[in-house]
Image 1 (cartoon, helix red, strand yellow):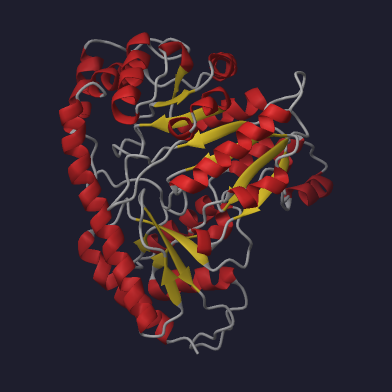
Image 2 (cartoon, rainbow, N blue to C red):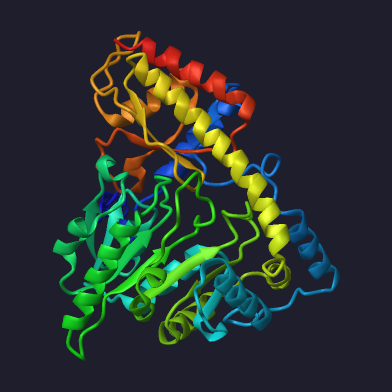
Length: 433
């Protein structure tokens, strides 16, 4: 379902006419919230900013080995255009990395490199979907609604629930399968920080395979986009599962998207990759070659060397994961204590990524100044204004506007501020009547 904006009315008022895409594309709720946060900080307010799915380099820097390799690459003047599909040495390193880390066997010609995951996802949608094609995705989830709108697809939204840790089930997906061409999955998931259980993903894979067997020779197949950007960031006994490792036959119908962005705190380095059937990868390459969404040459050269340095990667991840996990657990424990005290909050135990799923269920309550919190947006504003707590509501990720759940990101979180944030939240919620 695509929600339009005030811009359509603006066209009538001004007489200007732009493309239907430009006029109907939804603005980012996260960017809007970011603007409000910046203004409050500018005014001298203390803001605990847990909105951004990024890292503060002063807290989480990229691996020193990777940093040095990037510097060396620039010193050696690797500043020209890279290959359209990604440099051969990088694709070979990615293939070796996938085999070593995940047991996934992909040849270099089944791998496409780009400037992070976004252009790869866009290229996949453009490669597979035509106007009017059905595209299935869960809500909340990151940007699938926008990519579907880009290709003028039919939005088949699956409402995920807290009972399933906001991960879609085969039962949820099944009613939408007929004639669908894309099933967009993400695990560990943004925004929830939760993962697929093995049995659930197996059921989904079996369902996709069965659906494709039933389709005629001239009919499009159903392809799975599997975003596993956070797969190395799992905690405790949580394990990452992927379609092809569970069902080898899924290799013909799965395109993965991955990058160094999240697992190595390298969001600004801009090196991502997709792997999948060569036919699809080649078409994605052709589309992206016209966009020019290449990862920079020097960074490609650096990552090609970095991915082969297993000891350096493991050492970095061990420390990085412990720091992220500590923050997630500490905040989760704080929310559980607030819940125990009778305050209207909840949270899902952290599983993966840099996100914690939290709930603030305060619609209908009244602030000290007599203002009623009529809807969830009012609660979001109250948290920001009264507690200085900035988190992203699930409705920014396609969930219903009345969803009381939020994404809390710890990528910029200072450990020493966790207790004061929880105290500020506690004080604000205790003021509600």
